Amino acid sequence: MPVVFFYISGHGFGHAVRQIEIINTLQDLAPDLNVVVRTSAPEWLFSRTVRRACTRLPGETDTGVVQIDSLRPDPHQTIVRAAAFHDTLPRRIDEEVAMLRRYGADFVVSDAPPLACAAGRAAGIKSVLCANFTWDWIYADYIADYPPASPLLSSVQEAYACASAAWRMPMHGGFETIAPIIDIPFVSRHARSPRADTRRILRLPAGQPLALVSFGGFGLRDLPLETLDCLPHWGIVLTTTTDPPRLPVGVHAVSEAEMYEAGLRYEDLVRAVDVVVTKPGYGIVSDCVANDTAVVYTSRGRFPEYEVMVREMPRVLRCGHLEMDSFAEGRWKATLDEAVQMAGPSERVRTDGAHVVARSILGHLAVS
Image (cartoon, rainbow, N blue to C red; front, side):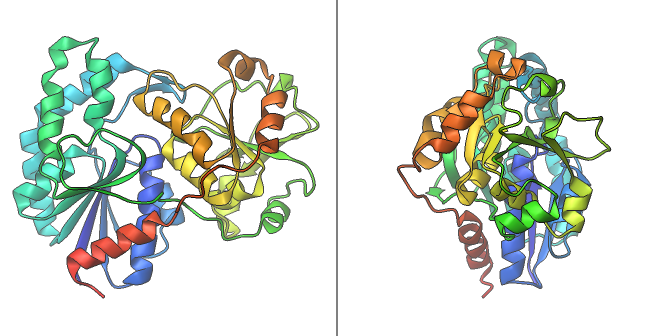
């Protein structure tokens, strides 16, 4: 069977979770297909959520954006690290070409490391960029403050230009040097467990409105749990990987290990709550779109994707903005109430992007 290589950015969890959804769909359609994943994203994310066997090759494939925490990027360090990475790109391409040949790769999917596109071209293998943004679009905003790093943009763009095509997700930016561009639906994760069952299994209140606090792979310190004005009307849900400290009444900790052991997934939890409190990023927004869950969002610092998300979200889901002062001081109730009481979105969008992409990959491989 053919071998499909997925190069996945380790920036946050969003790139990984959407490609895992594609991988699961792809392997459901072609169970014997060989899938290899090249990424610096954490191993547990794959072992818990990839449903069939795949080969994971840990390694840095891009540098993404350096984060101080979930809400504060570090533009200077972002550019410094990205420039250093691309200074070594010729060597890295050679190493990846050797790896692609060693594993007999037939097709490359990138979300969204430029390295993958350049290595695919050098190895004589078709590659596609499958993402909602390109890193040159993100870096261009930062480089304005650091002109000596301007060669970084051309390096990223030249690497992307090696791609055979771009499969562009909604809420997008960049893609200037890639052709053709094919727009695809949202790649979303759909809950499988009924809402009531998920609440029962996770010991969450059955009849109370719940808000899930979700800030991705970077986490968030110092949540104002002791001063939340939404308690006890709202229940607040946190996911944890360790035993949590003593929590206020009305704040519920869900053990990620127990959730996965019970056969549940994060998307089941998203569906079980009424609102997700988060920064606006593609992964959590697409999950909320697919599961009809409202979003209350904070600012996320200087990150170009934020403006696109804020502009597009009202079209596809119920959402409300929580000012940073209100977020930090625990004044959440008014915005939570407003978001959950909103009328449904004006547009019903497709969320079957994983199936569309999987079928496209099989079409390129001529696998039925």
